[in-house]
Length: 175
Ligand SMILES: [Zn+2]
Ligand SMILES: [Zn+2]
Image 1 (tube, rainbow, N blue to C red):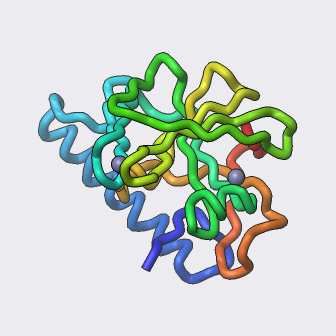
Image 2: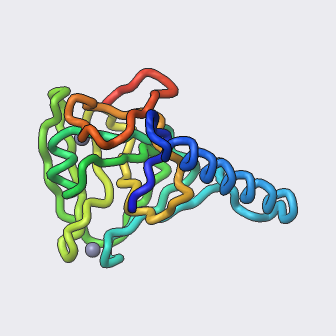
């Protein structure tokens, strides 16, 4: 059962947010007890990988933005009902392994180049040509339930009605 963080209107919202905050608090407590421990911020390092592990990207620091996308192309790409991307500055991202590319244009008119593992097919990251200084990394590829939740959702018109609504913490932008 998937957990949707920052959704509104369902009983899951408060619970999901509470458990995320609880996890965060535990991590902060641990950091107080052991100041050498990684808790995020500029020193944070995370790795996203494809399902077979062949293709990976290391990401330094916290994402500039985490965005959930309801668009039909993300639904097709993921096989799920939405995609979630974490945007990192290009210089904070380093990829390892072989990747194949797939380029398509987005509704904004800009192209997006997706990088996926040729062995298992997982899309691990992509380059939005609209924002050339940023790399989008598939949040699911981190396989980390403690990953920061999305702060915005785009293409609401294609949202499956059972998925909660995210109240953006700042104006939504599809990037
Ligand atoms: Zn793979
Ligand atoms: Zn999308």
